[in-house]
Length: 114
Length: 114
Image 1 (cartoon, rainbow over the protein chains, first blue to last red):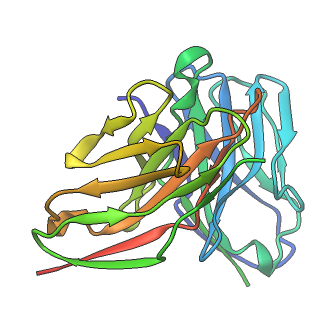
Image 2 (image 1 turned 60 degrees about the vertical axis):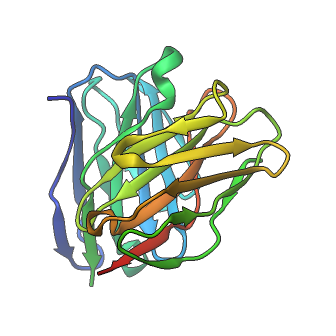
């Protein structure tokens, strides 16, 4: 089954404690990205990756890092989480070519930073 | 720059009534437009997409949307609401260029009353 898998689904942490949210896709997609969803703001892109070792900032990259060492994985790293990073996070992937307009989303990771 | 406006953060309809969720876009290039649905505690699922083919687009679960260039609109409709349609709906436009980024509206929460 084609899917984007995020882990963990729920996470509570404290300010300053480094954490990583993993994202993996099994569709051999080149493009992957991270979004955060906040009430009244919709989804905003944090980082994206066009392919292995190619990443770039989205609209709200401050406080986040990513890496793309393998095609299937795109982890989101919070080096020193702060309460304003409490949010619902989604990973997405899509292929290149004509089909790249369809993005597939993971189930989300709800993060609370105390 | 592309943008999306969803009118009405909350919409309530009776079961069996028409569903109309409004979306207006701003784009300097021919837009690629999408509607996604988010059921409680789940990720985003693609409902339908417009990619410059037919202006009336049919999606899953009986939803459809009509692209109207003159009105810069892409409203989502369903003739008869079902209880299972209760969810949050997001309209999105693909940003131009190579990033494949989606610009999301702020979402509309649809409630269906028995």
